[in-house]
Amino acid sequence: MHLLLIEDDLDLGRSLQAAFRQQGLSCEWLRRAQDAPPRLADVAADCVLLDLGLPDASGFDLLARWRRADATTPVIVITARTALENRLAGLDGGADDFVLKPFAIPELVSRIHAVVRRSARQAHEAWTLGELVIEPRGHTARLAGQPLALTGREFQLLVELAREPGAVVAKGRIAQRLAPLDEPVDAATLEMHVSNLRKKIGPERIRTVRGIGYQLLP
Image 1 (spheres, rainbow, N blue to C red):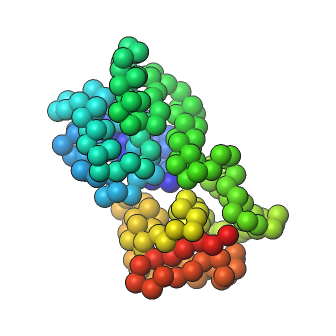
Image 2 (tube, rainbow, N blue to C red):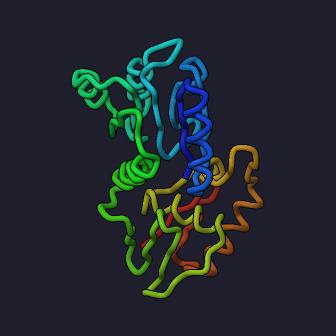
């Protein structure tokens, strides 16, 4: 899972990146609103963590701009502003959750998984697609009740396809989300991972849409 963190506090940003790394999450960290992408789709983030008190702009303005362009990527507001009107403004402005500082890292990670799960229209920790069951948080998958021996990249690929079951997911978007920040995934590498995953879950479950991407079938 790839996160976008927009937070100007150096100590908090560093500690969050380290904590996310231990949880197997990649995280891009920005400190100013002007460095944030105009559209969340441009960074292919699974979830955004947004501080309201940025040095060059209000987090509310950034959230409003994103929601005009992208209505789907989950956004969690993290802030020290405890007033009720701030929480209501954040939620009414399109935030999926609101976390007050200081917070416990395990709770924040749980909230991240919860909003991502809701965005994928999955009600439970285990995502079920026919005989295929995926547990993103536990990094496990089963087919017809039997555990699947997947590599880290294969599991990430499966999660990205399962996030939008039945939809065709573009190759470029998958490659962005599979790559740690400094390790791009080229077309040949992506095709290799798709081929390996097909062997483990059945070739009929992943359909190639030539020139566009891949589709996970139940």
